[in-house]
Image 1: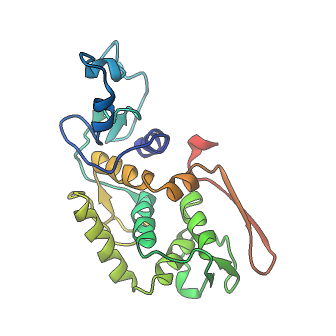
Image 2: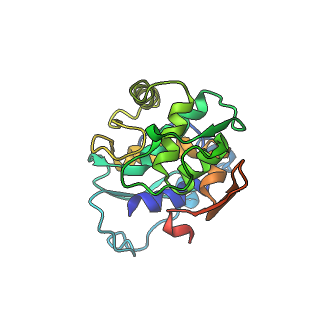
Length: 238
């Protein structure tokens, strides 16, 4: 549940890429610079009247709630414990994919190598679409097949691509975050609540990712003329 809370809070805001400590997830330098002399930090950040009552029932073993404007941590529960992050993995997958500066209008078709056992087939094998369609399917509908096709389109092997994901995590000080595959099926895809928030913030700084994730639905027509439509897996949008 905490991942959905973070997704809604963080992607609704404009956040800087800086990573800070001391009670802030992200840089608040701009906000501080804009404060009038004498204004306090407290006046800019929502405060709970009853610090023992969150107002929400959260069953997650680890959780984090952040003020979207200031980046202040309002509440946390085991924020540094490592947990499996499942499909949140795809945020780093897409960040690494986009770092290769792909031509999103490039034509591509799913192959048998892209198909994951148990995954819904949103696009037929051999059906030609654009890379931008795969990107939307991966982020909106958490499509495993589309995500693997994106990885294949980079020209890297899956092993090489996952290494780039882990290198990117280290570069961004996500030292408790590790990836075993690009789609999130492996239990080895782990992070903490606080580092998941940082990953979400990094992704939110990319306007294309931010725009795609805000979609409740995504519809497109393949190059063969077949219409497709999927719904977001983020239940808070629906």
